[in-house]
Image (cartoon, rainbow, N blue to C red; front, side):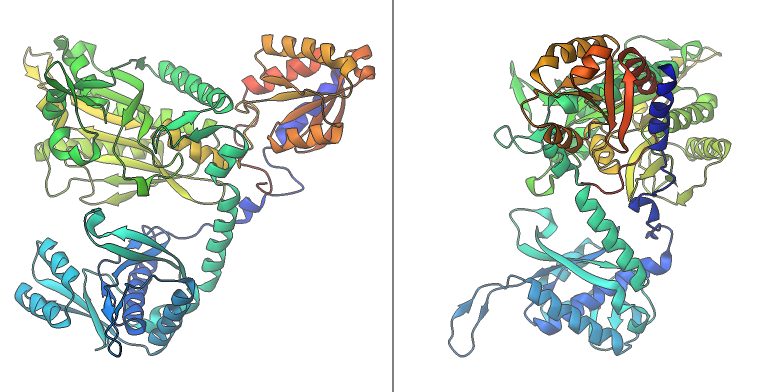
Length: 635
């Protein structure tokens, strides 16, 4: 019956790209971004100003604060103070915006856009800006003005009707804004300056595009995203939870989620060892002096948890792994012959995030970074970066991600290290990207203060971008920790340190992966790869024997309790995204066969047990479905 194995192999291969039915996600057209479309960015920025003007025309008591563009549109924060009813003298509580209010604001926006007001830039002195702000009694603008360190102060006007402090850019007039491509989506609370002790503001989120078709496409993507929400699927598939009794932002990996995590970690470790990395482990806490040496205590303190007292000394739970790797490098004097060192660690770190910012697996307080640090000679840097990019490509493609948007960020105004070392490091990053043949953009002045970097965003099955991988040169920590090696000339020199992560964090990447494949994991990652469905109690022992044989071959298998009717067993297995099922009756037991069913393609026919298990094991090991990006519709 070995000839029957071929339909099963064809099943696995057909899930890569079914010829008869392309997924809905594949039909989604790639939407432009702020980074690659300056006109779109101008439309969003100008739309934000028009919305603020409309809010103040509909609700004159509203005070404006800030209104930046964001990835898919813009938002604006408003303060609604208490008012007094002129007729009764009663205090009227601050307004809480409703969906009906948003409709009124959008209607007013359309009127403003239709009037074709010119949008004009004006430069004024700080004193003049302050005078005008006082004149219209906008106290939040005074604080914004104080935070602007450059002069002259720039103001943008919408006709002669409205203005705000702004650096631009904007379209030339309101008629350049496509009003049918704007949608006011929601209202949320936000503290002024993110400070819980300050005023509570109301934030209107909106989206804006260049034409109505793009808006329609975006809303279609949002609908698909709802079906793929990792929080909903995580609960439905019993993968993970966040237990509020333990505290927000702390992830509990359930058995099924843990199986997937182990598969990801095992592949990650093997790929790193193949690429010449050593796996290391470091503590979860350290004396506060370490964080003072690294600079985190001064520059990152607001994102760190409070310290704990240990025998009259303060210890800090770690927000980063890099200082530990620096201490390991410093443990002995290194020779240039020893370099490069490539040390990788799945290191769990803890960072303080406000409760209002926590979001499933995407924004948490405890997470595991897939961290690595390379200590190398200047002349080794370009080859090391190429190695990082090769490894990034290998790992991400394993999980179905092969579309990237790449940005090279260069030296900012405030930076440590000489111009020469910055130039050499930037050229090494550029050279590595060119060797890979990858297209990339340049963010002039967007590098970290300690070195230039490459950031890589992956695109998922429905076209969304996710920041994951990063490669950063660091001239700061080697200097702070006094890291040295002995050069060929016998002098003491400072190595270049490279920070790099590929997933970013295990938690966030797992959330992205869930949403990318709609919880419908490829065979090699599925927590349950194969489920046996007994038709009668008489075959239960036979199912257990088959399951035991499958486990010895490394197949993740379950046996249904058989307490439900067969149709319900099949439905339950399909809802749990089990890729392969086998219906087992007395006939199958007597012939040592299994009636195989695919979640995607239905009945596949009868297979010999040994043939089926061998093919399942082979396909899992070869990751046959590694590029699969979800079913036609996320259930």
